[in-house]
Amino acid sequence: MKKIVIAIDGFSGCGKSSTAKQVAKKLGYTYIDSGAMYRAATLHFINKFTELTNPKDIQRALDSLEIAFHQNEASDHQDTYLNGLNVEKKIRSMEVSEKVSEISKIKEVRQELVAQQQRLGKHKGVVMDGRDIGTVVFPGAELKVFMTADTKIRAERRQKELLERGELVELDKIIHNLQERDRIDSSRSESPLKKADDAVEIDTSLLDFEEQICQITDLAKKKI
Ligand code: C5P
Image (cartoon, rainbow, N blue to C red; front, side):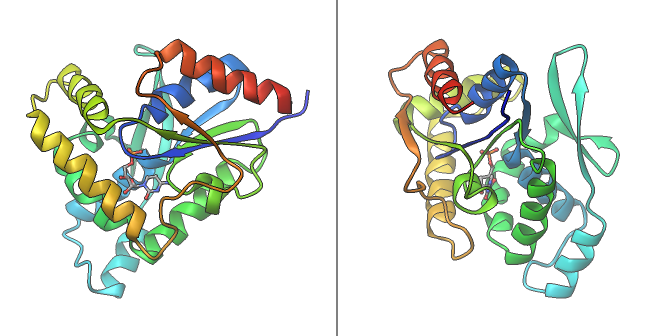
């Protein structure tokens, strides 16, 4: 059977990752969370006290950045590793969420991570979610989806996720963070968040999770 690339982009907290993960599972594809890579890079920059205005400092931090994904057998999730350490929980914290969009707009960071993402998807059979997957990473992706959802609904979902990870955060703080990330992600000069012309837009505000997955797997099956 023909293997394709499925690119899922959209605003923060629309449920892209959980949807992409299940779509990949249904199709027997590999799921790649590009946001986790930007989050791991952000944690690395925090750990290294990287001076964001100094290109040499940025390059030095990137030279010592190694990101990997490993299956967590206990939770049936993929965990993100930074230089050999499992950072899955840390990269989802509010501390990282508050800094990730600033790091993600740095040209050198994007060049490095886009190259890694293209290597990970070069044999196809992948579902990758992010902000620029259908526009920059895989502009030739056979299926492109652009997900949106009402801000309050997105914030409530994110609050629940954080709580499940043991972090209690006020809804207003989460709404502010989502809006701020969307603003920075959409207005940056390097590969801004935008819908690819040939992407199918799905508003997930009123869809239940199973419906989202079915819609995308049905679209994928037509291309395979
Ligand atoms: O997908 P997630 O919300 O975990 O992504 C965290 C942040 O990483 C985004 O707000 C964005 O700043 C950055 N990102 C990006 N390009 C991607 C994926 C994520 O700039 N392809």
